[in-house]
Length: 246
Image (cartoon, rainbow, N blue to C red):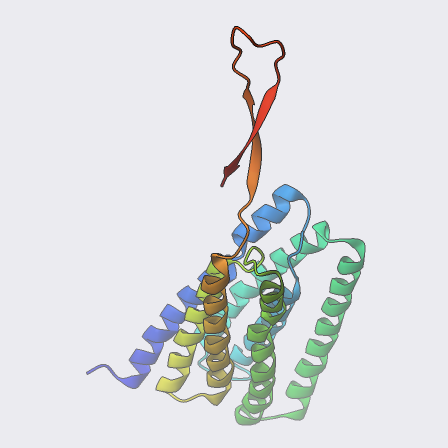
């Protein structure tokens, strides 16, 4: 019989793998941005929200706040590096007004984290109190992270196109929420349960929207020049434009 602690560790390791996949799932989006040298209609909201979420969970996982949280600590440390890279790329290729808005949000996040760290370490002197304060903040910002794609979901409904809501991001978001909710329920941790339960719900809604609107999304085409075939009676020549569906 596998003990609850062993089962929790196994689920946590699986959760780390899925979370790593979640952090990497936007790579095709950012490769597209890099090639186009433009962020097009993509929104920075999910990446800014995820960065804030990783900062808080990283702090939560530190031994001075919540001991024996190695799995939480490691995956969110990795997430900080990956999300930071995405945000730098987005800032480089975003329009000037979007760039300044992002820098403003990042400045607010940095100031907020400084206040949280100072307040928790100086004002709370037990692991229980520190875990409770940071845990509540993690619930709030974890919920915001999972809800951040709502801006994209609204665009999908308005345009009836899933072009700017990547499928793999939605899928891994759903799986990530399921796995970490299971991790939290084995040895009940309300601070991990609430945001990941919401993540499961929001991820499922995204998948439903994706499959519903995918068939309605306009397919891009490109023009291919084909040479005109000349016959004996031909007096002029030119090119014929043919659209080929991707």
